[in-house]
Amino acid sequence: MIIILMGVSGVGKTTVGKRLAQRLEIPFHEGDDFHPSDNIAKMERGEPLNERDRSPWIASLQECIDTLLANGEEAVIACSALKADYRQQLGGDRDRVEFVLLKGSYDLIQERLNDREGHFMADSLLDSQMEALEAPADSLVVEVDQSPEAIVESIVEQLDLAQR
Image 1 (cartoon, rainbow, N blue to C red):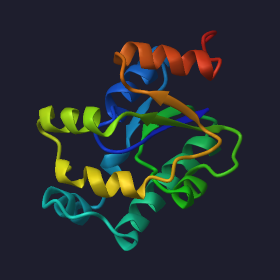
Image 2 (image 1 turned 120 degrees about the vertical axis):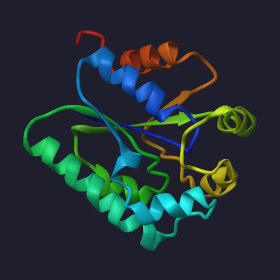
Image 3 (image 1 turned 90 degrees about the vertical axis):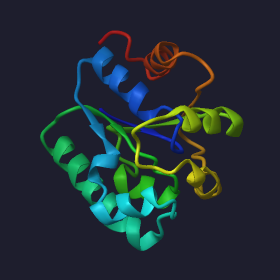
């Protein structure tokens, strides 16, 4: 299974993703690592990405997922996957790809972004990400107003992965 933790910047995709991967004893992949350097520079300047910017990033992630699936491997991937089209490209209707939306209030996420250090994403981009988010109707949704450990256990329980 490939579990894609999605949501806006600051929601905890990386923190939860690393812990979930450790809990399941499978690899973790940081979606931000697949961004071209031009995208990172743009986000550092506080400029939202457009569709043309996102296209090579999504294609690179799709290639990673395709390779993992072809090799019968499992992984947790942190990726904003804000739009339905991106999710379709990344996992679509494949039965071995599961999307989990990490969701929190605007104020909570803004507070986390304000406290975060060492990340290239400008916290001023939260508004554009919230506007771009097309919440999936058919994915697991987990509120992030609890500890990372509690979020991980909620995901494990709801995806019925406890026997791993």
